[in-house]
Picture 1 (cartoon, helix red, strand yellow):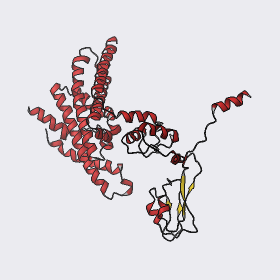
Picture 2: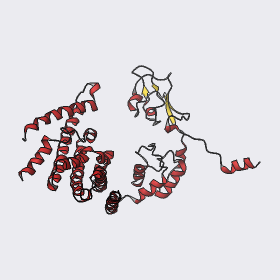
Picture 3: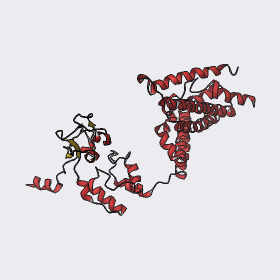
Picture 4: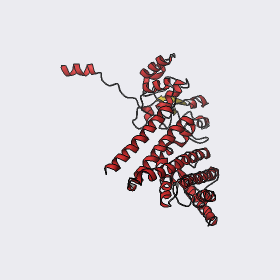
Length: 192
Length: 186
């Protein structure tokens, strides 16, 4: 039980996918303009990441490794991720048309969110079991959502401030992201 | 090799089948009238109607939030068909209005800036007590400025067709095929 809590804490704060491992920066910069969009993106990614982490672990354990096809890992995982994303898109379109409009092109782009593939591969590299993989994916996604929400909140406030001309828009966003990343470095001593 | 091909093919089939099932069971109910109207629109996605494309325009039409004369590329014929489909009365003569832009007769302009304030596209330049002028490229021909002008110095004038401003597109009628055939026969 303790190790499960630890892995959640570690993936959300200490080894945050976005700010510490620098994975999934595209939606991090792209969909963080608006708070509502950021939350929606975070939730959609949470769903995709958790499901694809579990599915890719199952595929590796019961299909690829027994058949000696581990070299097909990348293409198989991408296939699974793409299918899960497509399913998410269908579901969101059905459940919340507004969210579907807000997320726009970034929803199919979860497929190419390197955090999703990265977590699936890291799971295998670190030799996690099934539950561990599931939690690792879920924790990473929670970390992603947390950072998205924090960053969107900051950016909404930045919009209202008088930023010097050359820094307006994306540049100040990148500077803010860098500072946020440094702030998250403070968590690195949390777990030994 | 064969094993790899077979396992990926099976995986693809399973995932694809699952997705198509999901798409069928979670299909979004779309407005059938909007679907039908969308097929009637020209699918140019030009946005001249003020909507983001033909689909949103069709939805607005179906909801009765847009006039059937909304589509400049569709012109009179489309307006007639849409009016027929939606069972509404429409005055088709309005459709043949030429594109117009505002023009300031400078000898009467007193530089009051009233027209500048009402222009939705900010296409009138000028300052208090200086003669104003209209940037014709940005003028959408709304005519608000004509109402606002205290000296009646603004007039809406027809504008020549120009390829680089889509709202001014007026294309000559193509010659009829029968005419060309008869010309070729002689």
